[in-house]
Length: 135
Image 1: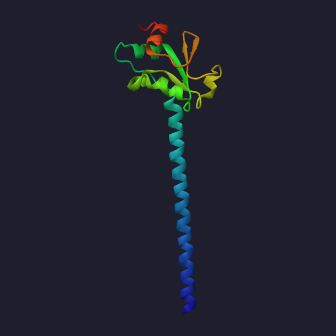
Image 2 (image 1 turned 180 degrees about the vertical axis):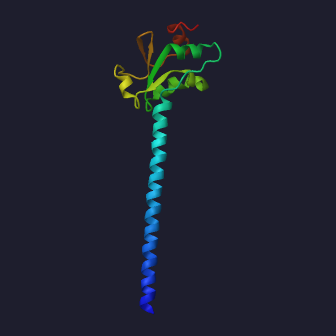
Image 3 (image 1 turned 120 degrees about the vertical axis):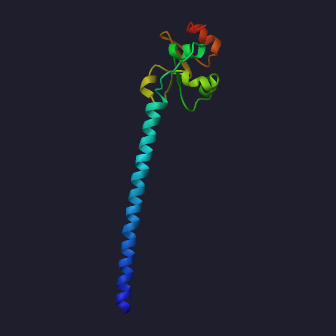
């Protein structure tokens, strides 16, 4: 009788081990899919957004006429982006940490590319409007 109980316990333990292994593998697969999807979205959408200007304003014009090169760790880049506030989505910018191949000619960030010329450092909106002829 005791032998039968031991056999049942062993079977029960083996079944539980199988279930736990299946659960762990399933969780790993789900986590991998989730992370892959999020990384894909970050690379694809965060750094290649389209400018959607519904009204004729200076910020939209600047965004359509220039490219801002930044990195995620640069405090000056954050300062530059903050100048645009909620209108930042209208600025065409590239994060050089993620899109390094697009930043081969960039040695300092933030850098603005306007009419094939490069302007380093934080630029105020008035200066950008003048450089882009967006007055």
